[in-house]
Length: 329
Ligand code: ASP
Image (cartoon, rainbow, N blue to C red):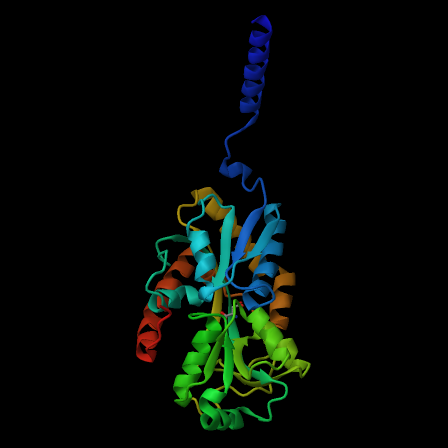
């Protein structure tokens, strides 16, 4: 009996001691453990490239590692569902892009509200896109490409990162501009799609300069056109789609960081300050320039500016998508 009592007392004492040691997490301690950054697309793609760059720089500022986790599929909506349902404690963030604005128009059964279920951390960069083709394509320039697609129609294959992804949206706009449908192939991100394009397994794709620039420069794939209004500094020989006759064509994949809704204000501030610092980090600026883009202006990178931008983009794309008659489900 006595032995039992001593044993019990020791257990109680040990428990009390360990309870005393656990301090409640406060914003002052944040971050006291690694932060997870969900990329809602496969590794090796444009969002992955931007995310890892930003994660490394923010991690240095915050004094904690930011661990990138790729959760691709369904045009990014699988990863974004996971983020929306995670605790709003600052240990879960995501970097995604324009698809956050197009998803509500494309998906009937989204498990989250793109505006009310997320806290905006900040916009990162507006990344131009390029129309590219497999190296073996015997079509020499953008004009010839358009003529060839108009002739071959559904025999031409194009890849995208799922309904609503930037590559899908860009291809939709392109097909609508040339009034011709091609056959789409869905990937979990354009990282794996690029691997297949290098292997010549489909014909064309529209993807961010983040991953197409070096492949075009090294002639591993064909670069046909830029989707921006102006030519790209990094690929000055590529004409814009506007120049080759698709008047007014413009699609840019803007990237931004969000967290689940309801962050403690101090934690929110720490994350957004660290993001702002990353956008001024010379290493980040240099890497982004090599990938054909640059950080947005500081006033565009604030949480408030991102929230306003997202609202405007949701409103901008809804009629375009409706007119195109596309739905994911
Ligand atoms: N570039 C992709 C898209 O089309 C996503 C990615 O893999 O980053 O949305």
